[in-house]
Image (cartoon, rainbow, N blue to C red; front, side):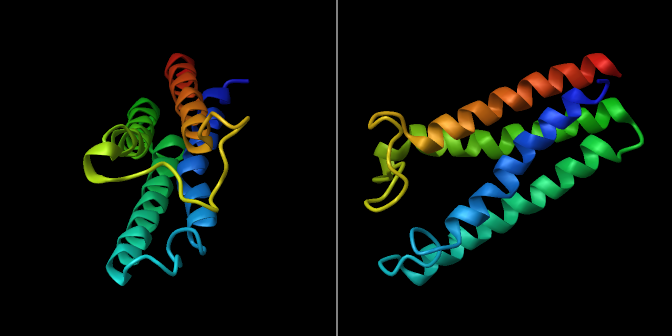
Length: 137
């Protein structure tokens, strides 16, 4: 399959471009009753930004006339999206942040944060797909 790399990159892109809006446009995040209106605005801003980046990444991955440049840009956009998550997770103790709220998604097997696992796997898909797409064309 010559496009397996771009398909894997597309799956990773969908994970940062579609999953957060589906999960976070609800009562645990953007509509959380205890969040300030300004915090809600920032959440919606983040979700729209991630989704917009994903649309741009998909254009680069599949439609850009220079395939190698498009694959590179699609990969870099994905790394920016996932990198932002991992930096915020790593620095959460510095600003009083947390990977989850009470009543949110529980840890997998009681010990593995679902966000870390899901986004970690998505980064692996992105990198594997990026390498495959780069080598295919």
